[in-house]
Amino acid sequence: MKVLELQNLEREDVQIFYIRKYAATAVLDLTARTANVDIEFSIEMNPLGCKEFSLSIKSPIDYPLIPIRKSILDYITNLEVEGKLPC
Image (spheres, rainbow, N blue to C red):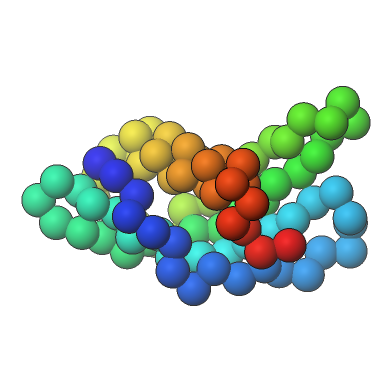
């Protein structure tokens, strides 16, 4: 299981400056097929300066959720470290 890309990545306007919310479609390689999953995620800076990631999967999918969540969160974390998420 691998995340290929995030399509239609859009940042939502939030009035709180230390929270960033996004919506996107994750393209997943599920070994035998590919799947498109609608997701929403947020990145919040806690009082100690650490980033906390949260993920919500909006589309039903016929695959175990724990590996999907882990792969998507790892992909999002890498995008954030590389500075490729919209500000």
